[in-house]
Image (cartoon, rainbow over all chains, first blue to last red; front, side, top):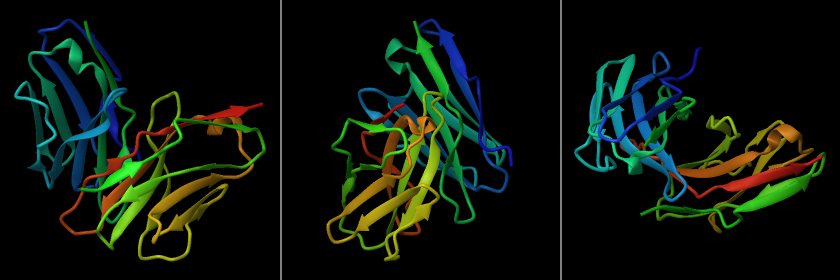
Length: 112
Length: 116
């Protein structure tokens, strides 16, 4: 199995620009999670999808953040407009069939 | 609300020696899961070991084992015969066992240094 695939691996952009992070979960997994990791706050859950439906988005910091899962094999996390404080590592994870969450390699986002 | 505490920001071990990383948690639930994840400098989050709370037997994965003390709400990770590749951040995580639960709650992490 290819594991959870995230792209891009690194993203550097100027504040105010739109950022889109992508995730392909493990085939057969019906749950998908977006996490953010920062030095100050550690690992935080942003949003959780089950069977492509957003179940809990209480961790999304503000309206500038949005996430979609149009099908079982693809999800996006979008920030518009981006701000320097959004700089972090963003992880996607998927889960299913009684297996624990498996994480992608993360996207390191730097907003200048 | 559940919390996970890792009180050791950093630990150091000599190669081939044994080290134990501490984790405590707070919950009122009786059914839950506990995990240790490893994050090397490459920043991948790699599952090391998993423990179901209803199991009394401590989980073991090769050189990695846990000491699960349910009454004390303690879940320590023991790494035997430490190798240079074990150097990483280690995160303890909790997950409720209820069907509607999904969230992993992470501790703040312990950085493990391995001395050659």
